[in-house]
Length: 175
Image (tube, rainbow, N blue to C red; front, side):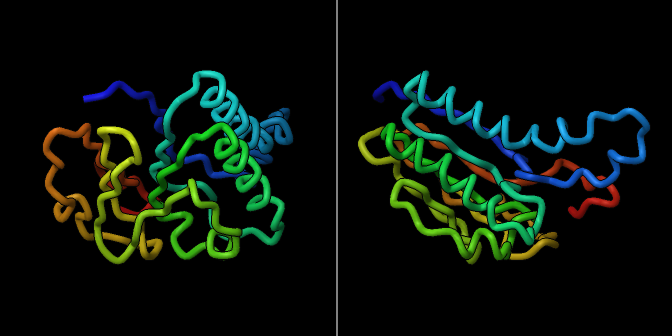
């Protein structure tokens, strides 16, 4: 098996409005609201500097649909930066970005792969002994055990099961 490097992340919630934050007097509201962009920018910078082979994102890129398309454009620009560095990206959609208008409206990039929401699938990472298995959320409220139907590991490869989930539900969040 050949050596490779990758970064895993989840729950970026890019440009989340953090509505409850303003209820706290003295809270650094604007600084916190820009934190998700800084986090994605830092992840992109780290991936390029460390020359990782790929990035896996386990859902919730967004916090739902946004009236400001700049959110999607920022994400696209960061993915393009990774692409210029030869870094591939594998993504499953989570409950917050399932069916997102932003996600559906973004221009496709060959090095960015969103795994299907219809069924689990396996994607071999080109040129590496790695396979990413996963399934995106089709809707916000998925209660089925998606992992139960994931494909069996590919023999001789490093297998990554990519799933957006929580071990237990946390009200008011869905399962």
